[in-house]
Image (tube, rainbow, N blue to C red; front, side):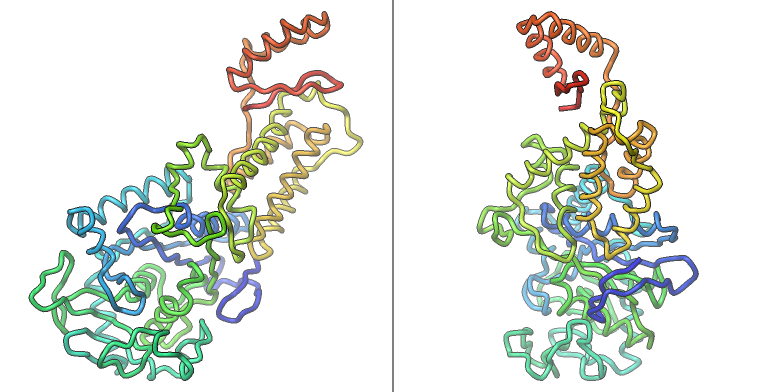
Length: 464
């Protein structure tokens, strides 16, 4: 398995730190509002990464968090906590908001999208004492200082390699590049523990050795990763927007505590736009998974659209591209339906081998998770199946592997005895040149979501 490592800016071969086990951490959602399709893109890719690793024979232990406290509107420790803002907008408490959107995210991610559930799926608020203990270690090691009225801050000048992930030109950072909070020693310093505002009680706040407040956003991931996976991990995933601040600060505080390399690989997904523009409430171009369902699209279609581009390249959602992905999925399913109709297929000179397909699929994903190439392989398999070059047993294997590794359902059940009888009746009507009867029977099958394609060898059916 080779992956592009943001830390080294190179594609490198993966070698687990411990035996055959991959320790993997994924930054989770901030649960202050309804997730949209842009939020889910990264998780679809990382789901394929986990599946590909398991298919390659690795044991995978994975942790993902839910950020339910501490993520301020600005990533640079300024502005309002997103949870408090979301609570005020809905007239609820931050605790209520967290419960609501964790429930929605859980349903959408694991029930609707069918993602592999992480071994550890942890709320930041469940690890408050562990975060305080971690911050104490940073304080004891001399990495922190207090800004009165603001909180406990990490002194980035104490680390010679701070900013190595983003390759920050710290000396050249303009004042606006990081928010200048009065009292910060360095523009890149960041909050470990934020104090609650004076004369204002927050929904989420805790006592600490430094004062009543809440953890900084970056702290939770370092702590949850360390508590569940240990001092060092193999892969840390997230969006490219996390590189300059969030992941940079995770590395700083974790390595300050452990004195060890935090993660061997940092793997980042690019974002998706809608109609060529950034997803934004103000533009009204935010779509949810339910919006896709309401328009009649299966979520497997959205997965096909997502995986048709590489995780490192920017995507663009349009309804036209989604429709194109639906047609692509239908083509695969039409080919899979030939599993039950080999008697109506031409006889090809050379048959596709199931083992060869498995090898090519694994090779594509082992090459920096090349999902576009994996889908192109399915295109060629579909063409071959419709040309009679793929056996029924081979199609069974392919359908199973695509479901297991790509999390897309392409296998097709056989039609019913009654539908087969309608098909036979239509064949007889065509032989008799009774076109009215033939069209009538086609319409009946169409109403039952069965499409028909007439070939020189007879009619082929496929699911609509």
